Image (cartoon, rainbow, N blue to C red; front, top):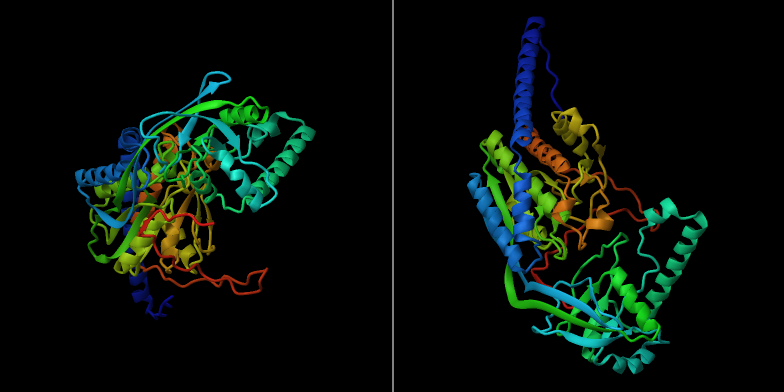
Length: 528
């Protein structure tokens, strides 16, 4: 950092200059507090978060890359920004498999009749408008890959279960609250043994978990049945299918267990599956970018950041609708109370974060002029809770700057924030890492958990009703304040990196994360 010069004043000159400095500092402080107060007032009295959440989550819904809903969301965001007087555009970063989800209907027909809870996985093939009826078979515990090849013809004309049957549908905190210690310890031991045995069972097929559904498809299976329980009541994680001709569906733990036990006991359940979806070919994929042009330093940038896409079994509410809404609301407020920022303010609503930070990685590749002049980027992507963690991401002087920016934030908002300086650089996880990897100051605004990882992260229960709007209001205000303070800072954020030390295992120096290129066309075909 630049070392200030030492000045020698006469007594009267020193007093005069100190008075001038004091007046300037006081004026800046008053100006900052005025803007901060306006941010609080606008959000408190005129919050648009619930309106935006309803339009995005209820009206448009989840935003899987390559779907019409993702495109509609891009267009909706540009329209919103335009109505607020903020320049916005959709910028193509790549292309993806186009797909549109339809209904999923799963019924048990024998030994009794029951509609089952389940969801086709993203990009799953359809059943072409009709229901498929068949018996079920469980992937067996074979001796080796040769034995699996010999068994494989048995799948023809059947649905194949490839997930372990969980020993309990109760989450651990429920067991911890009510079970005896002996009972809970017994469960954990049994579950660990079952999980290890199932992993070995799949390994002995000779195929990866991604390739196995494709092998079953080629052998004549009619569909693949999975259960990806998320360790909470009634909640499953829903990702993508690897089959290209037959449906892959996730069946809820409760119903999956019923079917599994019926197969094991020889009751030979028959189920019916109809999955409707549309293959839309290859479609362009976009980032939504909005901008409030700077006045004094228009070629320097402060960025807001949140991925726009989601998985699509729920509504993509807390992953990452809440991050999206936070950044949109912060931009709306900034346009009202700080319409002529010192530096240019950009927001990036990224596409295809869920498949590997692709939208933000593409932006970093495509916009070196922004990345090289980035003062700071603030990213939010871990649920609906209040922001309580900020790391310096390994930048040597991050503490000086972020502490200064937080100084203007009301105590009621900042006192619960834990800061870690200089911190260590994030190598992935969310879009700030795309910028950190090239040495640009990107920061993650870490939120309170609210059972995020069990109940809403990538699950079928990631819906509007899980949003905590009071926390979201806090986050929108805090983000707007940090952006304002970073814009106004007379100093430019230095990119000096901290020494990360030595890896205790290898004895080698720990390296800064390296840049990863965006996957511009997807999805990639799975390999073994």
